[in-house]
Amino acid sequence: MTDFKHKIMDFLRDEEGLETVEYAVAGSLIVAGSVAAFTLLGDNVAAAINSLAAVITPVP
Image (cartoon, rainbow, N blue to C red; front, side, top):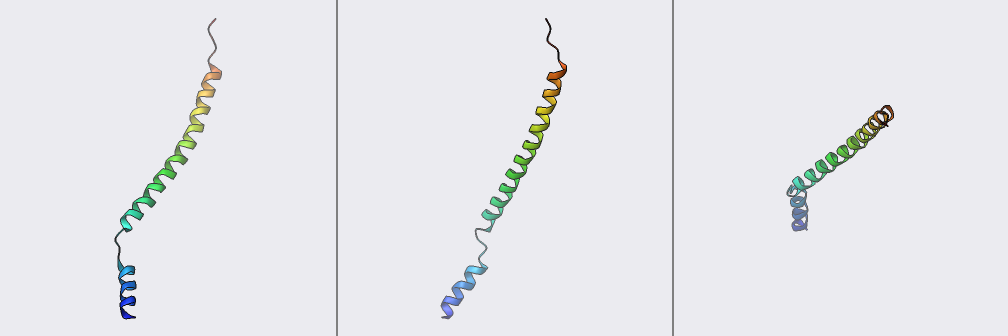
């Protein structure tokens, strides 16, 4: 029984592999932030182009 308890405690203290999880979480936050920024930026750029296109008159 103590061997099983010892193995469980060793497993809980083991921090190997945490860096991978931390990098995955950080990467997903960066991706989510980038998607949100590009979505907001894309709408503003499209609005600016549409307003410029409305001002430009064709030359006959």
